[in-house]
Amino acid sequence: MSMSHDERQLKKEQQEMQHELEKQLHERARKKKLAIRVGIALIILAAGGYLLSLLFYPPGAPLLDITPAILQMGTVSQAEGIATGTFQLKNTGFSDLLITGMDTSCMCTQVALVTDKEGPRFGMPSHGNPKGWTATIAPGEQATLNVYYDPNAHKELTGPVTRLINIYSNAPFSPKQIQIRLNQVR
Image 1 (tube, helix red, strand yellow):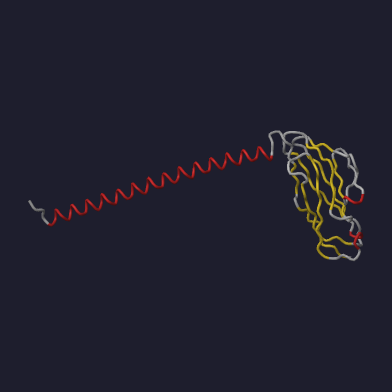
Image 2: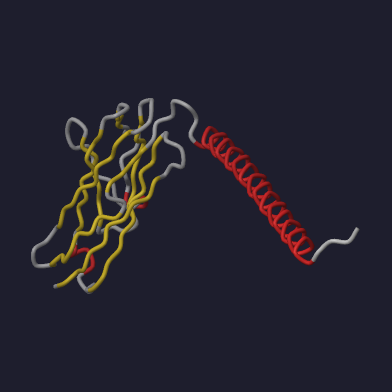
């Protein structure tokens, strides 16, 4: 028994529809497998990140958060003398943060930590910083770091200036380094 032209055409269309449906189902299955693989990869990355954080930030460790990371002091004039600025230090960890020392990259810059009162000034390591000094910042508490920049330490210097400050503590990744930036004029 032979099929008519219309029957052959109908059968061809049904086969094409069946083929298209199979392609769509195959594509959906492929996308589902990809989504599962991406999900598994994200879970593995998150777990790995968590485990790494435990290595670098042990549970209960103190954490030192400093704002700003860079203190913009603007234009500093030699004629006006010492310029001052402040950073805020906060213990965002879960145990006492012990500040054990500080130093600066140049003799023109000194820093002092204020908890109850202002502590001793620290400058360049080779200029005899205080020894045996410590300060404690409890979890959730903060302190102020006063900065003193003396433009007359370098009378010949004009233009942009960047100085570094290192803060030594019992927090992971000590010392923590921050900067002051300014434009020095006469």
